[in-house]
Image (cartoon, rainbow, N blue to C red):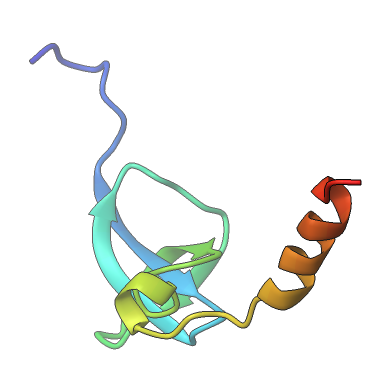
Length: 81
């Protein structure tokens, strides 16, 4: 591996505000915002839109989708005349 060309790899907190879930891991991502973690240390925090705590695949819950409205709209649009 070449020296001095790789980004710094350090501890970062990823936070999913929608699910009120956060986890500490190592990453090359950085942030100006910080948060105090459970161990008393301060780490940079990266806010994410979705994580395993809020994604329907992992939670087993699906979002309500207006399928009836979409099907009726499709039929109206492409019905034979």
